[in-house]
Image 1 (cartoon, one colour):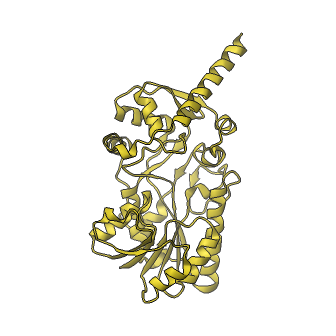
Image 2: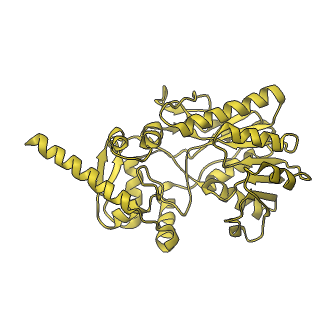
Image 3: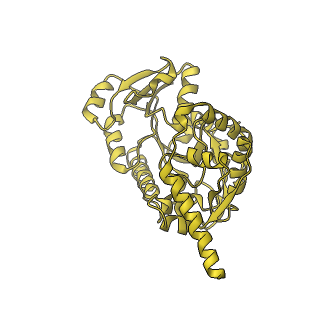
Length: 338
């Protein structure tokens, strides 16, 4: 296939790009070129910021594609630009939406592609919903060959996936575990969650590419493995070889006490129990299954992070904030008990 990825080097897309390049597909990456060296010359580079529409139009004027996928579109205006650029130039346009767009709270714990889209807590999710609405209107009215993909919490070898962390990512939580400190877990840690490794996600995504049955469809791609947040944090602590010291705090308190967007990231996403029904992706891509069990795969992620200093981004502000939250709640208990 002749494929163009807008982005192509992020957590989700890197595994897909690598697999396509290894399998000999004609892969173009349209981005600013800062991370393309990870593909060792196996891809064709179109160096530009996608927002530079005239420059991009010039770069692709003599090119047509079997598949174009935009991994970095977040609002409808960006997709209107994509439509202007790629109308008539691709047989399939794939938009990466988000499973966080599903209704909050859920009316049924089992999530399918038919679950309503509504998230009053997170602007990010509402923007993704608006993007989906725009693209499906183009499909219905003009036949624009759209496929919408909804990932949930997808991780790779460079980032330990967690619920509560600061602006610099999850390493500071890992560091707290290594130092024997308490770590914050939203709620009581018993809500259900799903972690999907990017190599598993890639298998489903590639199966949708060039798939005539995927045109006009929205498809979620996640693991079938369901975990509690307690299990997730325990698996990470075990991988580190340390004792987990959880400190449970309501998502509402975390949001009220922080400048981080915990209202969106927790109340609008991770605080909710999710159980995904992946029948649709398995029907569209026969044989698809996720094989990376979290407690096993996270060991590889932890080992990678601990052996690569560039992944160890400390966040002193977040670390101090965690201590303040713990101290404040401990003092509140003492005050109530007298």
